[in-house]
Image (cartoon, rainbow, N blue to C red; front, top):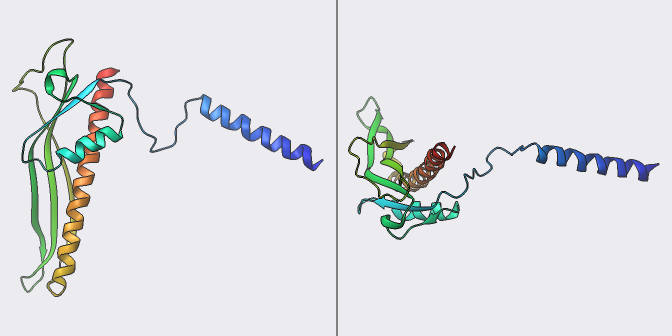
Amino acid sequence: MAVSRRHFNGSLLIVATTAVAGCGFRLRGSQMTIGDVGRVYVDADRDVSIATPLRDALVRRDFELASNRDVADVLLRVTDEQVAERIVSVQSSGRVSEFELSHAVALVVQRAASGQVFEEDAERQANVVRVTREYTYDETEVLGKENEARTLREELREELVTQIVLRTLASLADSVA
């Protein structure tokens, strides 16, 4: 009796798994795939600090990178990088108690028309991708707070790259559909 119940539970698990997989169910956070979008060229200003991490992230997401824009099917233009720090709040004594760090870029995702080169379209509106973080500041812990700010800047850079990759995926999914 115990053996048949074990087989029944095992069979039930297999049927449930097959039904869930067969209906197209995906766990939240599963990687979005949009098929073959072709080669992507990252066109970034020289002073954009996230160009290399962005290329690495695109490769990790299985994008094929183009060596130059002439052979690319998709142009990913990243410009106007802005890294800023501003005071959010001060104490009654006039000392700073909170800072806000922000990192932003202008992003344009452009597909090449069939067999045509990318056009310099002045009317094409760039999307601004911005990430921000706030942190408290204490003058008695200057070294620790400097390390915290440096760590937050790295995290901002990583998050900005992730946001750009996700927006690129969404933009290309819209154009494929």
